[in-house]
Length: 219
Length: 219
DNA sequence: CGAATGCTAACTGTTGACAATTGCCCGTGT
DNA sequence: ACACGGGCAATTGTCAACAGTTAGCATTCG
Image (cartoon, rainbow over all chains, first blue to last red; front, side, top):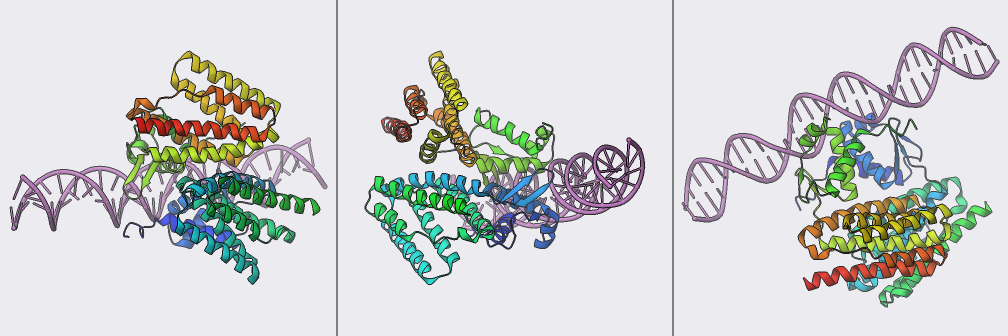
C-alpha cells in the first residue's frame, strides 16, 4: 500500500474543505478566497485551485468565473432535483443488488440497518442521518457498479449540505429516518425480489418527497 | 450575451480535446503530455491541466498521479456499467418527462426521432448514432432536471468513446439504432403514460444489453 | 439630492520556472 | 544470455509573479 498513501496535495485540501463545509463550519454563501486558503494550508494557490475544482464538481461550491468560488447555497428546488436523481439511481441500484449482492454485503447492510435504528432510538439526529446515508450507500455498492457509487456519493454530499442549510433556515424540516421503510428495502433485496425492492425504494422517496412538500406548504 | 462569449480558456481546450478524442483522432491509450498540449494550443500548462481535469471528471481520460494522463481505454465491463447507469437514469427521466414535457419539447423529440430514421435509411452509421444520442438526450432534458442532464452527458460521451474503441477492435459490434423502440418511448411520453414509458426504456436497454452480450459470446 | 462616471483595491486567470519523482537505458556482474 | 543497479532524461507537482477584470467607493455632474 505504497501507492495509496501518496495522496495528492489537493486531495487532502479538498477533504478538509469538504469536511468544514458539511459540518457547517463554513456556512453556505461563504466566499472561498484562493490566496487565503493557500496561506491557511501552507501551500500555493495551485493545489487549492484543484481542490476547489473538485468540490465544484461535487456541487458543494459554485464557481463564478472571474468572481470567485462560494459555498453552494442550495435551495428547495435543488433538494427536489437531488432526490429525484437519487431515486432513479437507487431504483436501478437495488435491481442490480438483488442479482449480485454477496452474503458479506447483505450482512453489512443488516449491520447498518441496526445501526440506524439504534441511532434513531438513542436520540442525536445527526448520527441517525449519517447511518441513514450509510444504508443508502451500501444499497448502491451492492449493485457492483463503480460509476453508480461515484454518482451517488456526489448526490449524497449535496444532500448533507442541503439538509444542513435547509435546517438552519427552518427547524421544521427536521425528520427522523424511516427505519421501517429501510427494512422493506432490505427484506426485498435479501429475498432477491427485484420488483419489490424497486417498489420499496420508490415508496421511500415518494414518502420523503411528500413530507418535504408538505412541510414546505405548511410553513 | 456579453457574459457568454467569455469562455474560459481551459473550456475551449477541453472542447477541442474532447472532440479529438471522440472522433478518434486521439486513439485510446494515447499519452497526453501537458507541455506538448500547452505549446500546441499556444497557452501555458495551467489551462491545459484544468482541461485535463475536466476530461478526467467526464471519464474520457484517466489521470495516473505522477505518471501522466492517458485517453481512457474503456473495456466491455465499462460498457456494461455505463449502460446500466444510463438505464436507471433514463427510466427516471421519462417518468418525470411524462409529467412535465412541454409541447415544444415533444415537437423537438419528434423531430429528432424523424432525424434518426432518416439517418438510418440514408446509410452512414455515425450520423445515425449521433441522432440516436440526441434522442436520448432530449428524453433527459424533458425531465426538467439539470443535474440529471449533466450526468447523462457524462455517460453519453463515455458511450461514444466506448463505441468507437470497441468497434475498432471488433467490427461485429456495429449496430443500427432501434428506431422502432425509440418510437415506443416517444409514444408513451406523448401519451403521458408513465409506466409504459418506463417499460419502453427498460425494453430498449434490455435489447441493447442482450445484443452486446450475444455478440460477445458469438465472437 | 440622485445618478452616472472614474478611481482604487483585491482577486482570479494565466504564465514561466523550480524541484521532485518516475521510467528508461545502459553498464556491470553472474 | 539474463538479472540487477545506477545514472539520466522526461514529465509532473508545486510555487511565485504578472496582468486583466471585477466590485466597491468616492467624486462629479445634472
